[in-house]
Image 1 (cartoon, rainbow, N blue to C red):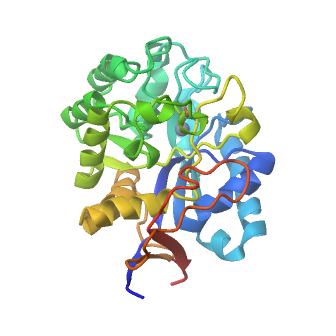
Image 2: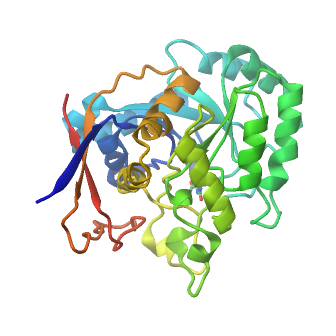
Length: 352
Ligand code: NCD
Ligand code: ZN
């Protein structure tokens, strides 16, 4: 058998939805299997709004991972984003910035862009909080879409809001989450170096036609919506170049199949079990192993000031002789992205 084997560091997932209850039990180990650090999003019900909320959620997550695997528990460090709410005061930011806080950032969702609730209509109403974040170096993560806009244009329409943020709070650290358009990528490059962006794995593989081409594919439906082939090229170029501004955030966002297959499917693509294989495939076939490391780990560690020492290793293998690559299997509800499609690479954990 002619096999390529590559050893690499675990991924740092700078944007993931781990959910609560039974869904948390199903999905959290899939992230911990391949990542030693993750920034966990706050849009659970009720949302994560305070450091105490984050500490409670951390206990739940750690408990679930410990029950699944002591080895994974020993190597997985969840970090948290608080949800920006009308009552996120400068005092909340001060607590978030404390040394023993598991909070790394504050996440803003405009109202009605996804299913998460938000009571902040206009960021201009949050000036004292944003000033505190600027002073205490707490990054602002943005779901950058204008509510009510045409979904294909909603991200580009948010650029003026970020221009306002950059001008009004010149030292505020900003991460534009799950970018999907050439327009936003160009804008990111033009802003100062403390304004970065995450890119998901699925947005490196999908266009609008994969969501709504000959058939409707609810498992490809997410926000921001995948866009044109030209936008896909811009995303791939940014990821494969892996300049310090761009890093991996899976936005792995599981929803149960019954909801996804209903008449009103919620947005979100569940990628945690397959994203490492997709990214290895993309970067190593492009001949970019160094960019893989920067994009999936180093850039996020630098931006968030995290210790980059890996807690374990990943082994990626590819069987070159296989006539037909094996397909990605589907374990259980919720549906995995890329399930049933051929995948040349397998990725497994190795202890150090
Ligand atoms: C996310 C989810 O399901 O929580 N969905 C998505 O399409 N990205 C919400 C979000 O990230 O805004
Ligand atoms: Zn998300």
